[in-house]
Amino acid sequence: MWKWEAEGEAKAVIVMIHGAMEHHRRYGWLIQMWRSSGFHVIMGDLPGQGMTTRSRRGHINSFDDYIIEVKDWIQAAYSFELPVFLLGHSMGGLIAIRMLQEEKVNIAGVILSSPCLGLVNSPSKILNALSIGLNIIFPELRMNSGITVEMATRNQDVRDADLNDTLYVTKVSVRWYRELIQGIKLGFENIDKLPDIPMLVMQGGDDKIVNKQGVRDWFNQVPLSEKRFKEWNKCYHEIFNEPEREDVFEYAKDFVNSQLKVIGYLV
Image (cartoon, helix red, strand yellow):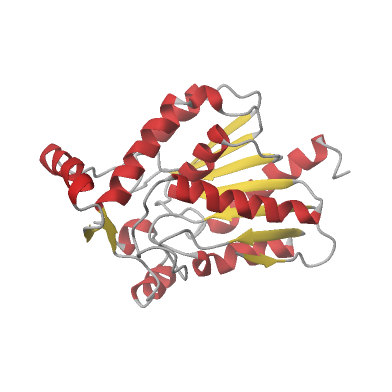
């Protein structure tokens, strides 16, 4: 994991979880925005992605591998003795959900960015059935993810950078896919296990990867005292990379600052 300290006096710590196929280096702009706004940031590369070498690229043995990893990042955030907020994008949002359902952590709020709670383009019934069998006999078999940089964002600069990014994962294993599907299922089934913490869910209105209706359905079922939903109408999947990303960031920052005021860390 990596730590970036705030410019000036820090108000809180933001623990960020990246999505599938990507890595922490794609979040340089967002990290700097948080730092310049008075927040420490902690982030790492998930198992099987980015610079991690603990498992084969695009492969995990269990979705719990992600939960264990992120819990370590949160533990590291506690060392600053400041309020901790969790920000998860796409699969990172699903990881945040599953971790909150299964682990007891002390966080002041959570931001979910286009959380992976359903896919726009799911494999056919035949391929899905085949993956169940392959998960038993050949779980590390890797296949093309079917996700392109053009589907993720309208930002051409980000697209160009991704096309030359050697850390970007293009193939995922059968086990990875089955664990993702199981994670989504449990995210819905265990919805009542979520702790009652403030939540902001932001969703790209023109998401080509995550099914936005699934996100809305999940949000409507979440039994929280304070929750906000914001759909960014023209945005693709990566709302923090879109041309509107400064507005998206300001909205997220407003949510964090409002929680800090409630708990007395801002006046």
